[in-house]
Image 1 (cartoon, rainbow, N blue to C red):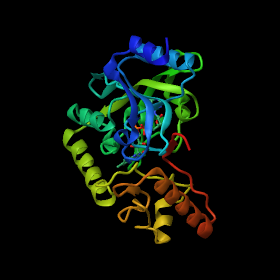
Image 2 (image 1 turned 90 degrees about the horizontal axis):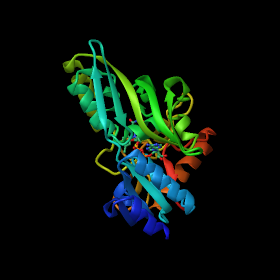
Image 3 (image 1 turned 120 degrees about the horizontal axis):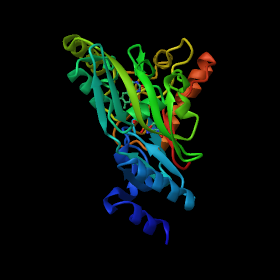
Amino acid sequence: MNFDEKLEIILDKCQILKNESMKKHTSLKIGGTADYFISINDENELLNLLKLCKEFKKKYFIIGNGTNILVTDKGFRGVVIKLKFENVNIKISENEGIIEVGSGYSLIKLSKLALENELEGLEFACGIPGTIGGAIRMNAGAYGSEIKDILISTRFIDTEDEKIKELPLELHQFSYRNSIFAQKPYIILSTKIKLKKGSKLQIKSKMDQNFESRKLKQPIEYPSAGSTFKRQEGIVTAKLIDELGLKGYSIGDAQVSTKHAGFLINKGNANFEDMNELIEKVKEKIYNRYKIKIELEILIVGER
Ligand SMILES: Cc1cc2nc3c(=O)[nH]c(=O)nc-3n(C[C@H](O)[C@H](O)[C@H](O)COP(=O)(O)OP(=O)(O)OC[C@H]3O[C@@H](n4cnc5c(N)ncnc54)[C@H](O)[C@@H]3O)c2cc1C
């Protein structure tokens, strides 16, 4: 039996998309096709799919909401795996709430759930459009808080021995936009977070402020992947880009946002080549002026 035949034994046909455009699955709306785009509903399905990929030597890539990646025009020759793990379980006591949540759950939905249950600590995440899995991998953060501040532990598959393991907070190796999950071939299954009991009014007001600030400062009306570059030690990269007068600088439909210099946006029909050239131009100009090598925060995925 070939890969396709075996796939249809372990999964339902409706979970398998072939030659799927990655434009549909990324917030930047850029990228060629993935050979397979497979939605996975539970951990057993995932383990079976990983075994099959191993048997047929297929490359795979775990996607969350695709809000921190730039896919190449040649696309991904392998299997993109979308984890639909959206189970959520809340235990509330007098002073706190413990939420156990599947890695595919949206961070925006999770912050709303926290608000409904009068739990504080997720206000920073109410406008981050990723999944909790993607957020743990890169220690997503905003307004002075990060995922690491609320995390208790994470369950994951170690793909080296195909075992399910659990990692306590202190072993996550969290740092700025980084964690052990960005270094090792681990697939996040679920996580446990801890939030404090708070006042619904105050939580809502903080979330509203964060939303307003995003609307005002970020080009949320255009496809983007958030901040394209990492901040450097003590340096706000967006400020350097702004100082160089690069707001509005474009290559094709890829543009340094006129609203926020840290966001490179797709004005409509940008392709990978446009966006990549723009990234390289910004890096080069920063280096020529400040002698600083800036690093990408977003991840490039696919064949070059
Ligand atoms: C408008 C906008 C605003 C944003 N604002 C912020 C912000 O304020 N702060 C911030 O930190 N980020 C921000 N981002 C970036 C992005 O939303 C976050 O980085 C988010 O955490 C990425 O999650 P995702 O599910 O989209 O991950 P994806 O982009 O799908 O994937 C990113 C990486 O995580 C890996 N990954 C995803 N799920 C898993 C899993 N279950 N197991 C293992 N690896 C996994 C992928 O393989 C990939 O390497 C913004 C993006 C946009 C478009």
